[in-house]
Image (tube, rainbow, N blue to C red; front, side, top):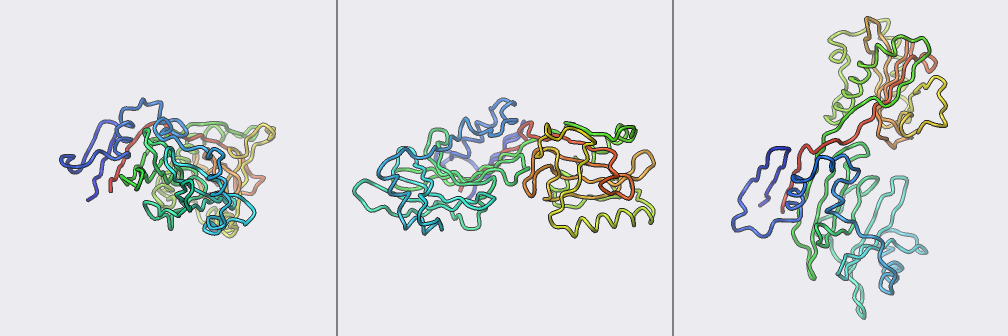
Length: 351
């Protein structure tokens, strides 16, 4: 039977009793550490590093070299015949992870191996199925010391832009995997103005900034909920007249037809050598186009994550254009920085 533990800022809820159960899992213990951690912990890139220490590359040895070059393991992960695999060792145990990484998303394919001196190495079955798991970009499988215990840890951030972290964890004894569990860390986020760029003399740049920040927040929320932005709801129940909608509609249709569309983000003469493209260029992952009402006038707004190509960065961008919304019609651009700021919830499932 599964046991679920939720830890919030001021609430701990345990479904079921510990009476008669085995020692708490590593995930449950991690959750307890999280509840006690100072608030500053949750703004860090890897807030669990104090308790989950990834293994480094295995130290050179005859066994490590044999695992790295064994054609069985290269074939198992689809690696080229002439390239040794990346090998990690589980601390204190004769258990190795041999991995191959490939593609622009740095996708990991791996095999677990038990290798003892004087014995033929054998493949180990993972403690949980890895089939269908997306071990690319932000998620991977690794060996680690979890609260000082050797373990297999699989997961990471669900997406490039998510503040959350989720892991499946299995400890390892001398003979078997133990204590299978999962932990999900959900974090609060902040959104604040980073930079803005204005067409000289465009008064709308000041006037539209609150609307732009509200649009950035609404966009981020819509992606989390998997829902489209509601133009009428965002504009207080109002929508443009038919002529304005037709002008904006042509632009929106063109962007939807271009599957790798990177919208313009005007910087109005700023020296682009000093601008980070991961923070001042629209990613083509999911830009949205919609009309917005600012002080009685309709403008074309583009909102999306910063980034290069499909890779998304740590900023939300909003660009404002006057009709008809061409690249030369820009009047204001806003960069809002977002990031984790606090612990919202910890969810643990013990198997």
